[in-house]
Image (tube, rainbow, N blue to C red; front, side, top):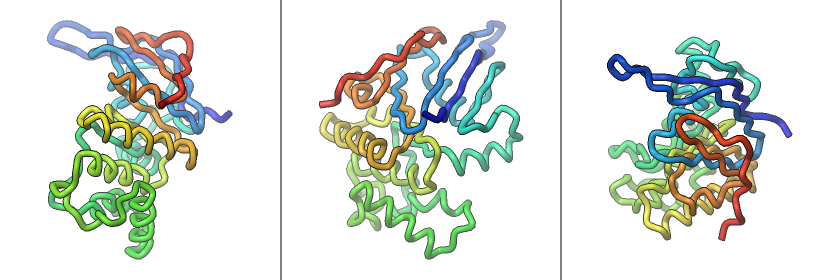
Length: 233
């Protein structure tokens, strides 16, 4: 198996007044291509910080961090922004859709930073909207869509650049149980059928149970061994 995420001895701290708060401490983590990994832990355990570091949004204080063979800690801010655009697809709890844009236009946004022609962009957007089952909602605005449909748009936007990693931060946290189950089934399908590598932060055991592996963070320390997730039902 090919490692996509390789982390060794990673540390991250923040200043809070005169106090130094250690968020991640000497953390090791390997995530392999095609994995679906859930990160769990109490609030303040460092889950979102770790996710942001993997996604290149935040930088560690020390340690090794390679994503798909690239040491992203050595990249300049502009190079890192370009790397994120090409390699990371984001799915957030509150969707982060532009309310003045249609579903199609929201999904197209990441492609506007590429050299693709208008026709190529349209082909890419139509393909991923079909994948998430929203072809018939492409001209609807977010306010005209349910929460589950908005999250499907967000997933399509995350997929449209064919990223190395899909980063999902509490993707079902704002959804009812039925919609949450549909989104989790969709993520599991994308992982299984397309081989997408997914790293998901969640407080929800139902969500975590859809992953291949569950890892627990507690006070900045990752558990020593992978915990296989039970079969999703």
